[in-house]
Structure formats: structure tokens, C-alpha cells
Image (tube, rainbow, N blue to C red; front, side, top):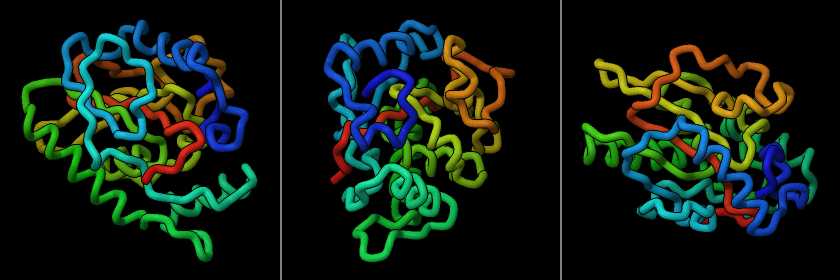
Length: 215
């Protein structure tokens, strides 16, 4: 995971990095102050290589990314396939990908179960770009943002807040936490940090298993 490499590059070499680079990618977020000082942390099993030293993190199978064997060998083709998957639920011909509906149901059910278990605590979820793009869309009642997925960096952050009517709002969109990042590295639709709050109910880090499809 190399800092500031957009999401598609994580799968085709431009995002490959050694442990030092991974620590360099994580450190700015951990030091940014946007994460809650006290929170429950839960992670996809496939994100266990993220160096979160000193933080107790529980692995949860339901937070894994969409099962999608990487049968596509080119980055432009991969971007097109994931964009069609996120926007329309389309799967490349002959590909053994988990359906968009199944991924959405799985990760939403998992997230809501975690939040119900710890109703009065902040929760940080560590997972993957495709699954978390579907999660944010489902919780906020919006369409999956394929452009935001394309601009995710390792590591990125999005904060959601639970409203009184048991719905969610976006408090901080992907990339907003990093004010040092060039605006060209963010999705064109990413808003500013108006309404950013420290104590949100659900926060997420998006990071794929580097070069490995979720099982």
C-alpha cells in the first residue's frame, strides 16, 4: 500500500510497497486527530497487515471485501468492471464475483450487529474499498459512489453519524481528513469538512488486501 496511490493501483503494481511504506501510509491518519480517542475497532480478516500498533482490533469475517478473483489483467479494464459492478451490479462475463446484493446485505448486517452490540460507543471499521463503498451507500440511502472508490488512497477514512431516526449521515467523506492531499487525488464529488465531528457513531478505514482478492 503506497500512500496516495488511487484504489485501482493497489491491484496492478503501482500500489505495491514494503512495510515502511505501509507504516507511512497509516501514520498520518492515526496522527490526524479525526479518529475517536476511545472506540471499538473491528477489521476484515484480509486487512490484518495494516500496521495499527497498540490498537486492539477484532477481526470480523463479515467485513471482508467482495469475493472477486482477479481475472482481469489490465488496470483500465478493472476500473471499468468495478465501476459497472458498483453502479449497476454487473459482473464480468464468466467471472466468479460475489453479487453486489450479497455483499451489501452481508456488510450492512455485520455493521448493524456491531453497532447494536455497542450502542453508546464509537466504532471504527477497517475494511476494503469496494465493500465499504456499498456500505456507505446502503447506510446513507445513496447510490454507490464509483468515483469515490477510484480515488480512495491507502489508507483513507470516512465518518458516518447515526441520526435519531436510525438513519445515517456522512460527517466526513473519503479523503477529507487529509488536508495535505492534493485536491486532484479526491473524488470530484467529495465535499469539504463541514459538520465534521470527532465523536461519530461509525467510522471506517478503507484499505484492500494488497494484491490479494478477498476469500
